Length: 137
Length: 137
Length: 137
Length: 137
Image (cartoon, rainbow over all chains, first blue to last red; front, side, top):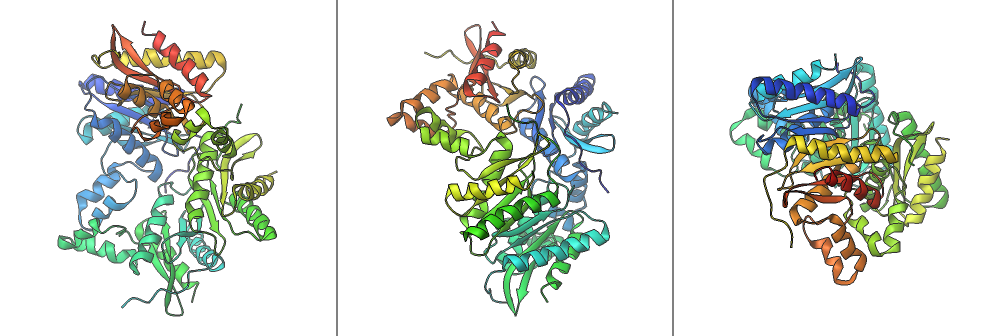
C-alpha cells in the first residue's frame, strides 16, 4: 500500500531535489526540464536546462503531478500501456501520465510531493528523477 | 435493454449508497473516493476517505457520470478496450470511461443516478461500488 | 497577513463543517450545495440538498477552491468587482471567484481547507458558509 | 516602440532574476511565487516561497507570459481596465493579463523573456518584478 501524504515539500528541499536531477543530466550530457510539485500536484519549483526541447516544459509537470496524484511512479502507467489489452484504459484515467520519469518524493515514510523530468528518452528521464529522489535520503 | 430513467436519487439515498461503499472499503483496509451523481451525471454527494490518492477525486466522478450517461457499468467499456480492435473506439466516445468502478443506481426498475468509486485497483473499486448498489435493494 | 497553510482538513471535520452549513440552510428554508476542499483546493466532501439549482454544483466548488487558493473569503473578490475600475481585473485572475460564499477553514491558526456554498443569494450562501466556519471553533 | 525580441533568457540569468525578486519579497516579509519565461512565454524557471497562496502558482506564470507575448508590463493592461469604456476590451484580448506584476526582461536593448510575480497586492508583486528586472542591468 502506498505511503500516506505528509506535509508538502519545502522550497529548499525542492531545490535540492531538482539540483540532483540536473546534476545527473549534466554528467550524462542530457538536456532536461525538471518540475517539483507538492502533494496536491501544484508547482513548487521548476527549471529547464538551456536548449531543452520545449515540449518538456509541460510534460515534466504532467509527470510530477501524476506521480503525486496517484502515489506511484509514472512508469507503472507506462507498463499498463505496454501490456496492452485492458491496460490501455490508462489513457482515460484523468491525470494518469503513462511515461516514465515521474516519481513520488518520500520523507520519513510520507509522500511530500513528486518530481517529474522530461527531455530525453523516458528511461533517461527516470534516471534523473531517481537521482532526485535519492537526494532526499 | 437498459432501465428507463426515473426520478433522481435523493440526498438521503445518496448518503446511504456512499456509506455502503465506504464501509466495504473500511472492511478491506482500502482508501477510496466515492461520488454519487444524478441521472444527468451531476454530483449529488461525494466523500473522500482520508489519505486517498488525490487523482481519485476526479476519477470517481468521471466513472459515476459515465455510468449515468450510458446506463451501464463502466466495466462494459473496459471490456471493449480489453477486446481491442474496434473496441478501442471507446476512446472517442465522449464521456465513456473504460475503468471498472462506476455503476448505475436502480430503484424500482428505474435508473435514479450512478455511483463511482476510485482509490484501488479497478476490481477493488467496483467491489465497493457493488456494495453501494446493494444498499438500495 | 493570511494564516499559513496547515495539514489538510480530515473527512470527519469536513462532514461537521458541511453539516453546519446545511443546518443553517434548513433553518432558513434554503436549498444549497456545499463543498469542502483541502488546502490545494481538491474536493474532500460535497453534498447537495434535494432540488438545489444544478448550477450550484460547480459554483460551490469554485468558491471553495478560490478561498483555499487565495487564503481569503471570496467576498473580497466580489468587493473588487463592486468597486469597479481596476478592481475589474479580478475577472482575469485565474481561479479568483468574485462571489461571496467561499471561506477558508482555519484550525489552530492554520488554513486547513475551505468551504464553498451556493444555492441562494451570495449573502445567503455566505451566511451558510459562516455557520460552517463556526463549527470548527 | 517596443524592443525587438532577442535570444531567449538563459537558465543562469533566469535564476539571477528570480533570486532578486525573491530577495525583495524576503526583505518586505512577503510570500511570492516567481516565474521566468522565454520570449515565447514558455517557462524557464519557477520558484514558490513556502506558504505562498497557491493561486499564485498559475497567476505569476500568466503574468510573465502576458508580458512576453505583448512586449509590455502587465500594468499597461491593468490601466486599460482602470480607464473603463473601450479599455475593457482587454478582457477579450487572448493572453492579456490586466494585473500588475509581469515585466519584460531586456538585455542589450532586446526582450529576452519576462518575469511574473504573484502573492501580494499587484503593487507589491510589481515591486518584486522590478527588482528582478534591475538584476539584469
